[in-house]
Length: 330
Image (cartoon, rainbow, N blue to C red; front, side, top):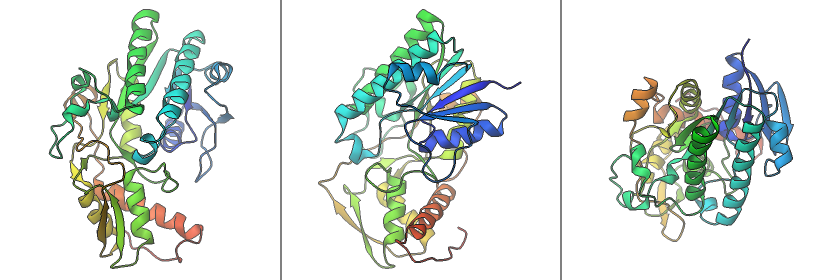
């Protein structure tokens, strides 16, 4: 029989995709979140609406399972994490500390914590042509204020629970995960979804706003590769933090042009230097990922963006913000 597991944050973007992945693999999955998935029903065998900032709810969420995929967090895109630091640190710290302690008390065998590339030092990310970040580059620490420091602290907590209490922990550092069924509007969306929405709503030959000068760089990992990597790491014997992302560096301006090409539109860019931009450049070094998992993400940025754009166009049509159109497969 397959294991019974819990996915916290199962109402969110990555958590929802992970639930579907685990169910297809035959796992019995309990989903837990403060909300249900937004765009389609959950695939979880059971779903509990619980506020995991509360200790009793974490005990309830982790009962009777062998593994915990701890994805629940207070988060959003750069505009959100730059302006809600206290909320993020408060809520995510409560969620994570309660979850790992409840898992220990309930006899959970293994817990995966989802960290972020935001734990990497700012002093290594001042140039757009950034050197890919290796796992050991996390120290000396200078994490992104608020969100990044909370993630880094929880990475250490996982290590101490493993070493002192014997709870097997796995830690994954996400590098800009994107894809369908993710938030695309409202202030919490990440840059690929925001750009897809803006271009979908723009006229051919129109102009969209880009935060910063557009020369800041990132790498982006498609959601299918993300959940595959999570599962492979959970099944491995590697206990230390591990990057999970693509290692293709691209500027925000280039990202806009890729989406515009998918949409078949000519788009002009208007840069707003007053908006949050984050670090100047960030890229994933996947050397250890390949070594540990004998695998790496393979879905191209173009393929992932095309699927994401199609999803967002469909949602905008459903809500009446776009006339119903037929989009050619990209």
